[in-house]
Every structure is written in C-alpha cells, then in structure tokens.
Amino acid sequence: MCGIVAYIGHREACPIILKGLKRLEYRGYDSAGVALLDDHKALKVYKKTGKVADLEQEIGNKDTHAHTGMGHTRWATHGAPNDKNAHPHLSGNGEFAIIHNGIIENYASLKAMLIQKGHHFSSETDTEVLIHLIEEVYQHNDVSFEEAVRMSLTQVIGAYAIVILSKSNPNYLIGAKKGSPMVIGVGKGEHFIASDATPIVEYTRNVVYLNDGEVAIIDGDQLTIKTIDNTLKTPFITEIEFNLENIEKGGYEHFMLKEIFEQPKSILDSFRGRIHLKEGHISMAGVNKFEDKLKNIDRIIVIGCGTSWHAGLVGEYLLEDLARIPVEVEYASEFRYRNPVIGEKDFVIAISQSGETADTLAAIELAKSKGATVFGVCNVVGSSIPRATHAGAYTHAGPEIGVASTKAFTAQVTALILIALSVAQKKGTISNERMREILNEMETIPAKIEAVLQTDELIKSLANRYKDAKNFLFLGRGYGFPVALEGALKLKEISYIHAEGYPAAEMKHGPIALIDEEMPVVVIATQHSNYEKVVSNIQEVKARKGKIIVVATEGDEELKHMADHVIYIPACEEIMLPLIATIPLQLLSYHIAVLRGCNVDQPRNLAKSVTVE
Ligand code: G6P
Image 1 (cartoon, rainbow, N blue to C red):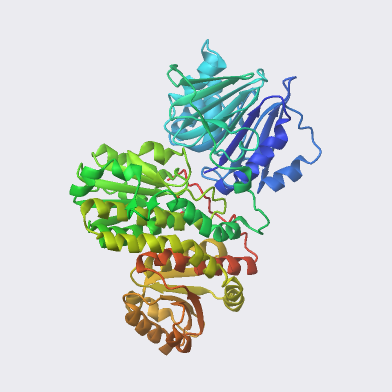
Image 2: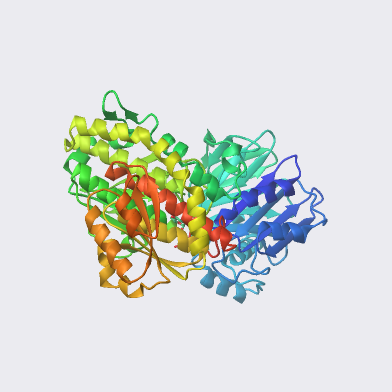
C-alpha cells in the first residue's frame, strides 16, 4: 500500500504533489509528507500524521517553492502511524531523501549492520534503513548517486517502489521498482512519478509503466531507464486509458455512491464488444488463446482476496453450471502458503481489481512455477497482475476510488459470466438457443440495475431504521450466497458493524443462536431454485423474532407478508442474480455508514491496494 508521487519540471512541484497524493489516498491515509528541493539546493521536508488535508494544514504558508519534489501517503506497516515514521525519510547527513511503497524484508539485518557502522535512526521504519544504506554505499565507494542506489538495491530483499532525491542535484530524481507499482508520466520538459496514473492524467496522457528490477533516472528533462545491473532499456510509452472526470466525484457526495450509480454503465462497458447477439457468440481473445487447453482441463482454480474472492465464488458456480468443469476457489493468501497440488493441467483464474494485491501476485507466481496456465481478470490496465499472467480479460469498470469495492465486483462477475459462456461454447456444454437467451438477458442488465437504483430512498429509510444495530446477518443460497457474503463485507468495511454472510441453510448450525429481536437479517430470497427452501429459512428467523429484510423478485406478494421489509428487484436469469441483488446491499451499507458518520471512501485501517502480504 502507500501512495507515492514525484515531480520534476518547470512547474511548482508542491501543488502537483499534494493533489496527486489526494488521488492516491485510497492506498493509505495514516500520514502524509513531502520533500521539496529548490534550485538553490534547499531541501524542505514537511510531514504529518493523518490525511493529506492535515499535511496541507501543517504546511500552511511555509516555503514550498521548488521544481523538484516528492510526496507520500502512508499505510503503516513498520512503525506506528505518527509524524516520526511518516515519509519522506532522510539519510543521516540529510543529503538523500526517499519515499517508499512496499516492505524491505531484510531491514532488521541491514539496520544492525548500519548501526555497527555508526548510523543513527530516527524512525522505526524499514524505509529509513534503505536511505541510510544508500548513504553508506555512496560514502564508502567511489560511485555516483545513481550507482549507489543500484548497488544498494542489490542488497535488498522485499518489495519497493521508491523515489530518491539528492540535495546536491536539484534537477535529478531516481525511481526504482520491484513488486510495487510505479508509473512515469512523460510531459513536455517535465516528468511525473506515481503509484498509478491518477495523479498524472491531468498533465499528460503519455506514461511508462516501470517493470520489476528497473530504475528510472530523470536528469533535467531526460528520462533513462536501466535495470538494477545497469542494462539500458528503451522506455515503452503507452497512453492512459481514462479521463480526468473518471477520477472525480462528479457531483456525488462520495466516490462510493458515484461508483454504485455508475454500474449500469460499467457493466455495459464490461460486456460491450464482447457479445455478438446475432451470431450467439462471445469474443474474448484471452480465452480463445487457450481453446484447446480449456477443452481438456481437469479443473479450474480461482484465486483472489476480499471482494474479488467473492466474485471468484460466483465464478465457481458459473463455470460449473455452464462449462461443467470442477472449480476450486481459494484465498490467494492461503493458497500460496499451503503447498497446493497444482500442475500443467490446471487453469488458474486470478481476480483482482487493482492488479497489485501482493498475495494474489505471489499465488500467481507459485501457480506459474508449477506449470499451470494463469489467466487474469483485472480492472487496472497495465498493473502488475495482467503483466504477470499468461493472458486475461480486463473488466473495464473504469477507475474505482472508493476503498470498498462496488462497480469492480459487478464488472468482475460480468467478465466471469462471459468467460464461463465462452468456455462452455468451446466445450459444447451449452446449446445455441440457451446461449442466445443468456446473451439477450445480459443486454437487459444495465436497465434492470437502473431500476434497482430507484430503490435508493427506500433503502435510505431502512438504513435509518437499522443504523444502530450491533450485528447483521446476511443469508443466501446458490448464487445468493456470494451476494450475502459481499453484503456483509460491505457493511463491515465501511460502517464497522459486525456482519456475517452465511449460506441460508447453514444458519441452523450456529448463527441461529444469535438471532433475537435486535438482529436484522438480510435474506436474498428471489424466485430462483431454492426459493421455497429460503422461504423456510426466513420462517426460522421469524420464529425467533429476528428482523427480516428480504431482497425479493418484483411481484412476490408472499414475502411481503412474511418479512419486515422487502426490497424488490427485477426478475432475472439466476446466473445474473449477483449483478442485480448486490446493488441494494451496497446502497444499504453506504447509507448506514453515512448515517453513522463514518468515512465512507476511506474506512479506518483499510487500503484499496494491498501491496503487502
Ligand atoms: C482490499 C480492498 C478490497 C479488495 C481487496 C482485494 O482489501 O479494500 O476492496 O476486494 O483488497 O483487492 P484486489 O485489488 O486484488 O481486488
């Protein structure tokens, strides 16, 4: 996690950096800091615990004049979130400054070695160790600043995206990356460095995504890219895919609300150009690449974390239903450490919004090392996971800024429906007629979601009624089960109310003991297979006086009499249920969190891009 931004060019660096840090706050907001280097070699460092707004206040009218500088927003790993541990960190002699996203795993042994050599540290961070190491290498070898950085990095174990400046070189910045993301914006006579392209898009659309093991040297307006062992590389310039308006709130109070309301469009963007109604056909280049393999594989393993894992669970149901291939869904963090049985005949689908989640990346590397084929389903174009996988499909939901994932989830599910259909067609497990039916239904989904969004006022009133609940239970069966899990996760994440998602039938094996008149129970009870069974589960809750909120199919009068509250959603194909039924649950958690005064877009302790394990 952590967000980094740096600038070198003809403009004032500080406003660009602060604005960029605000765009990257989704990556962490424990503290923020800047280092600004003016043309007269004066280095100004300001840091503050808390958000970028707190840092801005701290800076106030202080001198920020500089054309070179860098900033950092922190998600604490090593050392408490306080001013002292905030980045940038300086070398002992104050010559070098560093910002860092990642973890230096061997920092303790490096620190012990440096202490022996007389270094003193003023923070508890792993990052400060790295800048002292660079200072040590620079002082005791006849090398340039750049060589000192490269030589030091060869001693480092762990992940990093770093930017370093040297006080004596005001028009010079060095960036380097391994395992954490780094993008370089190439403008006219100016360069930008950031964790993603959002701080850059306002100034230039031309970017270079740095690869692992590469170092970027910006000398004046000259960009050079090398590997750590000094091999020159040609910078590969690509264009940013999104616009400034995609990363602004556009009149909504929060990014999360904007992103919930964007779903008719983001889902359309996910399937646009991929489904061909007339021909009853799907085109997904990444899937086509493995046509032969997919016809013969024994099983598919789906990996992901958090909300992406929930999408993976939907993927399991879809792939088994439609393509008749056994599927296992794994938390990436468990998979990577438990010596899984996996080999050349396995096909792995890795799901990630950010494309940067450390556990998912490590699980991918493990699967690849055992010979498996790995397919990525990611949202952020050019991120690490799409580059680490053999092929994949982008979800095209556009930038998601709210820390709690909403539109990325429905876009992942959309992509998984298309993948399952495409595999089913290749395997011959779906008839042309059924294929057409499903594709026709897909086309209607954006309008159905528009209709669900109309229930916003009703949901707001439910939020008001239940905002003080201590616990919530979410129940569902079949495709409704991952929806229940996702509903519970959303509520936990942003409102800090304890919530559990459960398969409705499992309730009697434990959670039923929690039910009393204080307990709101949200049940996905649409008219699909298992409907009657879910209705029985509702009766079981009712008998124990739980408060029942159902998500039901439009026109279902029976449930109106049984439940305390009904949220109606349009009838849909069962496999599309997660796309539609998730929306009211997103709105419910959103409104509850707002009413409880929580920071919806930046919930405590969380970060959007989890680049540490
Ligand atoms: C974090 C985010 C979640 C997200 C999870 C996986 O915990 O707060 O919203 O689902 O990481 O992230 P990914 O980018 O891999 O989907």
